[in-house]
Amino acid sequence: MYRLVAATSYLLHRAPEVLATGNIGVSSDIFQVGMTLARLLIGLNILSAIRASIGSTQYELDIAAGKLLTQKHFPSHIPASVRRVILKAVHPDPAQRFSSSLEMRRALEKLDFPGYWTVDAAGNEIGKCSKQEYSYTVLPTFGAKFDLHCTRLNVVSGKSQRITQFCKQGLTQKQVDDAISTFKNFVVTGK
Image 1 (cartoon, rainbow, N blue to C red):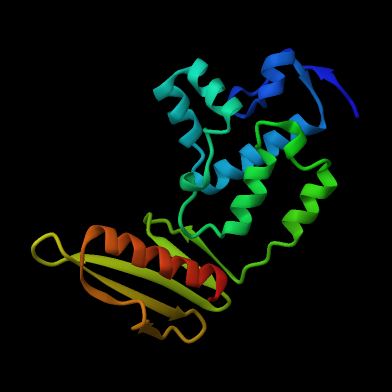
Image 2: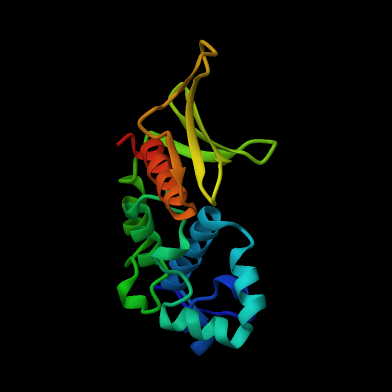
């Protein structure tokens, strides 16, 4: 295993042991890859915003305590198996991380999902799975209630249809959030 002194390091992704010892190695590299993957899934600016709001000292303490990234920080449509890989990579104890880059790569290679969510040019979330595009709309009704409309577009034929099993009426904001989460998971996992 190689060890190098980290004269400078990317502060948002710095492993706890690098802060403590100044040394970098395979384990700290795995930590940094995990942090990069997390940022790609939760938002590129999230960690910067957290660090700015709590300060660099508390940020480092939260990383060392394993409190900076937890299951709750991931969007609901990120499958649990993906979260587990990332949280293992960013575990504060190097002995609990992947033992090698090959082990982490193999864990990532096992992840296989038919769909994903992205954002279009207008800022709307779009689910993609095979030749289908999925979207949802939340419409306010009355008395702090909402209707949820979910649709599927066949990109080959151009035909759009409602997905009635996910369309709901008269929901509270919490119910809307839960229903959207269920819909997004359906698009990602096909289940």
